[in-house]
Length: 210
Image (tube, one colour):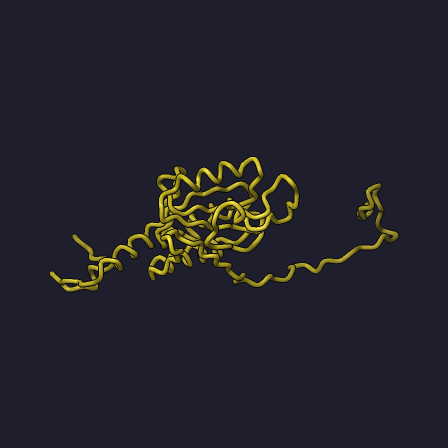
């Protein structure tokens, strides 16, 4: 028994659909973005969560994670990048096929984050072009999905910026946080030492045993 699903259920039998060739090509490219995860820190855990059933990145056609740069067109830099790792990142970017896209995921990849040291790159956009900056430390999976959708909209609209020589320019899209920080479930306070408490050598206040 054949159960019609999707587009074939909405169209009559033996129907003809007319469209423009570039729209079909952009639709196919938009729906088949293959990411290459360059995860070096905790942002990689949030990147993994986007492919799980709760967020389901497959709904947008971008769940096919490829670990070969020649089979990927979206580089997701998730986490801090050290100076020793930078040549590896640059080589991966150069080996990717055009058109290729780059997402800087999290504060560490975009600005170095809390690692303001000589060993950590203070922003990967100093060495490779970045299309979308995803804020957060680490960003939630919804923020990463929003960054991927921003690239998909540019592809679908065929609005890829290029310089006079035809070289593609980075999009430089900076997302804004789309969530509100919830209050603490339990009020935080400081317990002063009293007759029923003891202070340890490190200054920690612990209750006394009765």
